[in-house]
Length: 200
Image 1 (cartoon, helix red, strand yellow):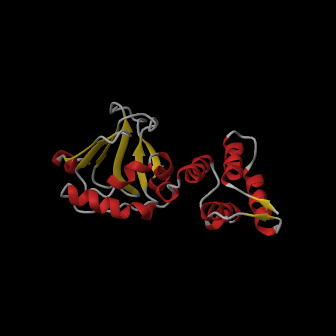
Image 2 (spheres, one colour):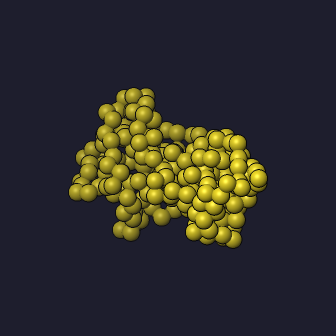
Image 3 (cartoon, helix red, strand yellow):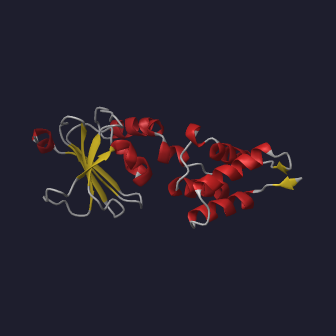
């Protein structure tokens, strides 16, 4: 009998992250562990990850963002995959933010468009919610200085922000007229700007 431990799964995560193994090979690896009786493990996290890999369509996609999160889960015991993959996991956080800043909860359809700058990997992140236009949420989100260039904001499907900047999803339930400024160090400022409600 071959015992599978966390180090074995972490090694497979690293192989994928370094580009030394493909998604298809990860799928085959998980399937082999499940169907072959010579492998065994006694760890709930290992079990959940192996079964998630084996049935990707029913779970989270195998990609670099999620592979880092699976590795983190194995190393720390903290599962952050829902935060980066499930819009609904942010709903209660949105309601809490709205209550804190005296805003109506105005939920976003995750399939609609947000205007985003290209540099969302930089700090800090700013956002403002103007009145909606067709197929948009009304949100504009950017890093650094706001620009008036026509191509500064690009259309991004709201749910795609889950894997790019999941920490800002909790602010997207704020009503029209609200703004926020946040960074990864925990700084957060939220305020209402009446002038935004007049924008066309």
